[in-house]
Image (tube, rainbow, N blue to C red; front, side):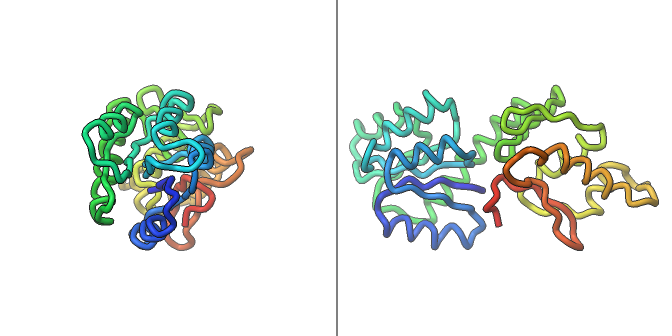
Length: 229
């Protein structure tokens, strides 16, 4: 899961990195409102951790702009030292999804992030949409696009992509993919390799980085960003 942290307190940022990265999160960070908004505009995140009091433009304004200008519904967990009801109302009115008052438990941050991401993914499922980074697959219409550019796939390509997107960024074994596509009767030839090559060409050609990665001797995976481990 990829998280954007917009926070100017270096100690808080360091603690979040030390706690979340070993748990498998991919983190980006910004120390002011302008830089945070720029990252939110450039990349897709599973959730954002946003401080209210920031240099440049404050967190409330950043959240407003993410919702109004970027039209993104990425879950936002807002951090603040202010704990009055009016402050919380202002945070939610700006478009935040949850509110955490400093000082906070790092474990509580993770629990709330997971809840927000789970809720957001549930909404995507109700709209029949699978999303990994800038790759979107509407399973009701079989329309696939990356960064807004339509992608045409074969029937087998759709099956492989569905499996990879549902499990992303986990590795999916060759055996699992073969079972998904051909059931208990996979072809004798190395057909999967051919279909993976065609899918890779369709997904990654003319884009800045390859989303479909080969894990030698194991299988394949989809990644949301070029810096995903």
